[in-house]
Structure formats: structure tokens, C-alpha cells
Length: 99
Image 1 (spheres, rainbow, N blue to C red):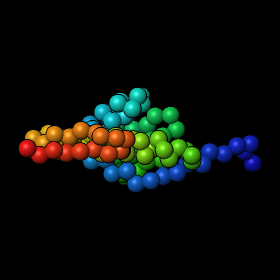
Image 2 (cartoon, rainbow, N blue to C red):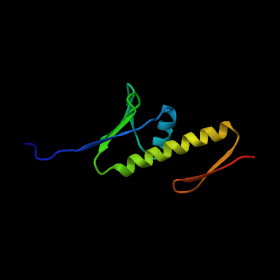
Image 3 (cartoon, rainbow, N blue to C red):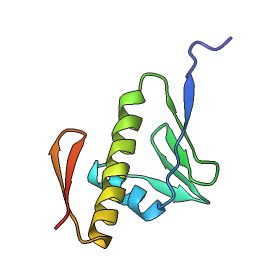
Image 4 (tube, rainbow, N blue to C red):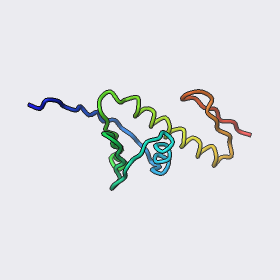
């Protein structure tokens, strides 16, 4: 019987735009490695092929921060394509203005 055990959680993480995901990670100050569709950092991993994220129990907030930053990057891209203005107003809230 081991002295300790690490419990890993897994959640669905549908990141279709890998470059935006990498940008989001960089903006959060996360240094990562990528190999064969798996982005890993510390005890975290995001598999872009199976669309899952594995992380240590108790680190849900960090995965949620990554998901929020990725969503922000995707919304910014869509707003730019449509020539709308997107700005973050508060933590986890944004505003899109169409002219």
C-alpha cells in the first residue's frame, strides 16, 4: 500500500482552436509542453484529441480559470471578425458593442 496517493479528476474540455488555448495559457503565466495533441504543465494535462483535461483533485479553480481565459480569447476573435468591440468589464464578464 503506498504512503500517499494522487487523485486525478477529468473533465470535458472542448478547445477547438489550439492556438487560442496556447495564448490563453501564456497569458495566465502557465508554461507548458505540447506533444502529440497533449498539452501538459505540472500535473495538469489537456488532450486536444479526446477533448479532456486531467488535473489533481482540489485544482478545479485553475482549470476553470483556463476555460474562462480560452472563452475570452475565442469571443475576442469572433468580435474582431465581425468588427465589433469586445471588452472585459469585470472578472468573468464582458461586453460586446456593435456599431
